[in-house]
Image (tube, helix red, strand yellow):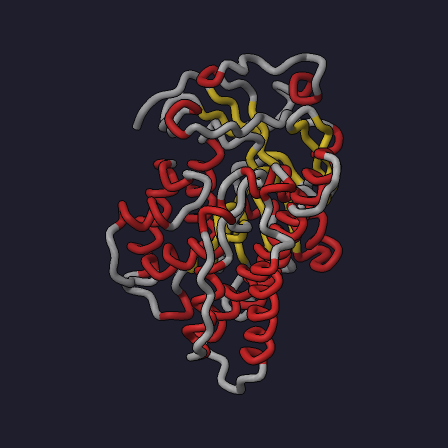
Length: 370
């Protein structure tokens, strides 16, 4: 892939997606920042990252010039511990500085487009429903045992799931009623949209917990939960485009597995999991308005990946790319032990190649610190 991003976008592009093959190596995250700075000069006015949609509202408030402390914003505004990624901190700081002297229609907006869950854990729906309740000015009791809802056992053990409980049924009825009343209001402004976003997030969590309560085999359960997560991601991307349509295209960054046009797969808990990625869901709707650039790695000494296996496509294609070499100025992010995250490496294969419009191949040498 050429280093000039303009060669890979068209006048029709509304969502330009850039993927990474693993969350463990941060080369693509730093390149993402460089690309977004270029894209801002080409009329792009928003970025959407693989982080919680609701938490992302806090980050956007800050980059629009709202009050707050940068350290607190990146700590609380990112899910999956991504606030600890130095490139994310730099992105937030740069966006705020960029927006300082810009009129509203030229400011850059920050969005999260992920669900509030990890596949094997999900929070309580209470705070999301409470936000909508308070906006509507209603007096309804939404008290729940948040610990019961948010523990990992609630997802992995059917007998521990509250998803089919009387409390869950009551919360769904309350949430559905509030959504009808919200949509019945004639006044639609920024506060209304935020209330809708919070309420839909709460109802989606209730649906997720309902799926966790189904007595299915582990493989079926994990397939359905992965599909639900990417279904929410796809819906969020379409909602983000609706909000940003009049301002300019949106740059999207996430794992390749969430962005490719084809279905995704992985091994989890000894099971083969396959699901339709968010990209596979939005691509038929957006058509040529959706462009996907998949990120690949040449080698990764910092996590012991070494040179690509010659039996893989990534190994066979090594040296045949127009590469973006990254060997001397790429800061490290937190290590696996720093974060406690297990975010696997997905090497390039035919499936990913079929699901992308271009490849950005990064050769990573020894990790250095800026």
